[in-house]
Length: 91
Picture 1: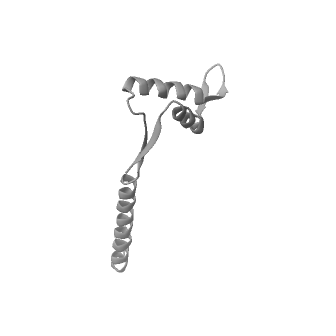
Picture 2 (picture 1 turned 180 degrees about the horizontal axis):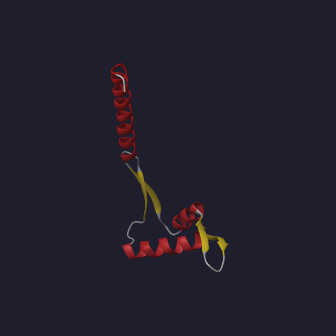
Picture 3 (picture 1 turned 135 degrees about the horizontal axis):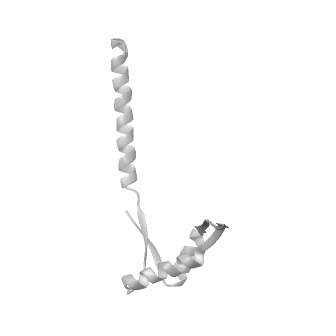
């Protein structure tokens, strides 16, 4: 690389590094959601999640070798809400 291009190259690399770092920080600051039900034990929660997952699952393709399923997220959320769970978002 010619010497005249070095400062420009370093500036571009530095700017790219700063943008990458900011992107990673933003990803870490995203909120997370979880389902909660006051008074529910861990066992009750696991059973509720399993039941709602089974109810919301649809078979997309089935053959002798494989079954492909998809979980309808709206149906899953509706099932949990009907079971008394509430979706809580935390930063």
